[in-house]
Image (cartoon, rainbow, N blue to C red; front, side, top):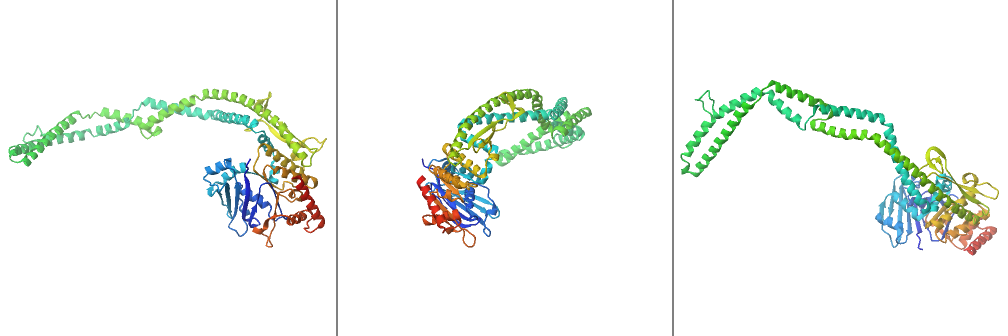
Length: 580
């Protein structure tokens, strides 16, 4: 099976590193060097490439920014390739280029395959490409939540399937419980709101406004209020157009126009233009007659009844009382009423909804209890296999008598869900508290690893857990930062041997200070500072032959030229070669 391989990293202006290239290869690579030489910057650099937090304090003093570039060969069809291509990244002959820049001011930029991408995308790819483990990860393993996650990861679909069902039911229960709490706690506010809505709807119903009624009444009130002036104006206009019966000698517009029309009609046959004008004057006469008739009708129909005016003003006052409270005009008042009816139905239906939600909540709690039990059963079965596998690995790490086990327990809670005939507390991941226990030697009682494991034992437990994961949920590249902390002697040799075995199925990069571990590496890189305290391109180099013996001698005795140390170093290398 073709696996992804981290081929190279270029690190510039990061911590003590000025400008260096770390060339990696498949198999087991050990990174060594004096304390403070910058070995841990390799881990830090990879963390940045994989979406880790950008700390401006990492930028080398005097530099504007730090840069980390990585080359990872990725097989076609890998999920990381698919996700990268979806983001617009391009592969260079099967190689994915990743870069991360951190400025001294704290700004961070990420590029993937030549395309600028969110830093979060790098973190997504990290899950499929590299597993990074350092001393902080050892501390993380002490947390119960991390131990449960480790067990669930090992169990695979056996836990993932019931957990997905449980999580869906849990989310529904939370949503229903939240709605129930809202309905219950806001009962008084809802009752007050319902009373106000009923009052408003009753007030509107008593008036019975019509759409556009306020506009019609305003126009009528204006007309009634000026009835006398309107009648006088209409009468005078009618007299001017059609004459006044009381003044038969008076001249009116209709008479004048008729005279003009007769004068032109007498001669229109002699000139077409003049005939056309005669026709237009005739039209004017007709129009004057129509307008005069309408003015006479208007004057006759005009109602100057003061009682009607009083009734109109009273109705307008009633409508104004509504518009002051419920809308800017009658249309808005009617809209408020429609919405008020709908909201009142909703509020009045809360009692029915309360019953429905309560019944649904109780049913979901019962369902959740059953799903939680299935989840517990799956975890219990997986825990036995996981513990046995880790125990077997510890035997290969110089802890032949150690025994690992899991305790899966629940906490009683009267407000919880019923599992196994008793109410227990529950959360988004189930009802189980999972704790990893270690009995380091025969006769020792199993104790939580936080209390029962030394620093060296904890390092080996974490390595054993990762090796077990490698067999069930492989990751292409593993990077360990001083996983051998607190370990020495035979245990260190066994860790080196186990890392070499892991490297047969994955790429393994280890930052170590132990020669027993470094001797088992297929490739050893030395990180060393220059005289000015920085690491340059020449400061990260591959050790071979005599150079590797000298470095192992320094790691063994602090003296590169000690004959005893050299003999021991050569013996370590020979033992490692024989094992491989």
